[in-house]
Image 1 (spheres, helix red, strand yellow):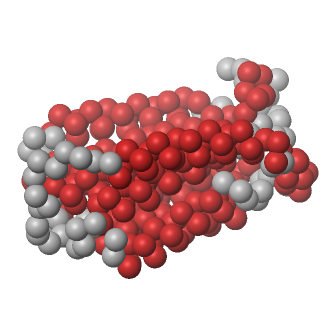
Image 2: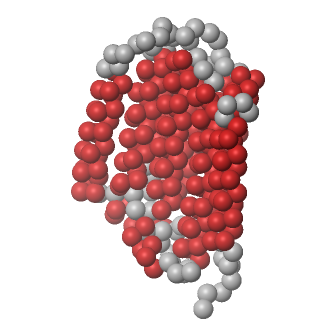
Length: 170
Length: 103
């Protein structure tokens, strides 16, 4: 493992751990942005500069702004923080943490015991946007169309669900 | 790029996925559950990127684009539901009270 990857990965994991333990939503969002930026650095280290740029622009930029807007509109107050604190007791943590630890051990065991190595390590520099675009609009054209359907469906359903927000409820 | 990097990146992705899963299991606030799902999606994206780096193929980044599109759609719908629950007059975002959502 190279040193930059270890550092960025450590930052991402620590920030993600901070995200799920915060009681205030805005703090969790700021830590989430830190996670995403560290992940973008990981992507760049792995030779995917296009994915790193998209991670910053789309994830840390657009999707997190959506979350910030919702936090602003929902306006969780002080009693909510107290309730969150009361939910975060050891009793609620311990069993899910054990289950997650078992899953982590399984995943790491599987990742470290990869025996089949049919191809030698492929050499080469970073994979730029040009190669990605050629793949995207060549063999993966149908997938692009399908994800455009998905985005349209998401747009329509978000509009449908939120169409009467702001009107007085009966 | 170091030859050991993809395996290390897969390990980082595993840890991130487990953290996100733990968040979904432990938290009861819908907003935090959505953020945890985003962490899990990012872990999956990192696994794809690592595999793409291992085989030096652009396909990993193509799948990363699909994951971003999926995450955007999921966040839009999920946050619309959160806003809807809040507009229904409840002061909490407790996921256990979702059955009171009408309309």
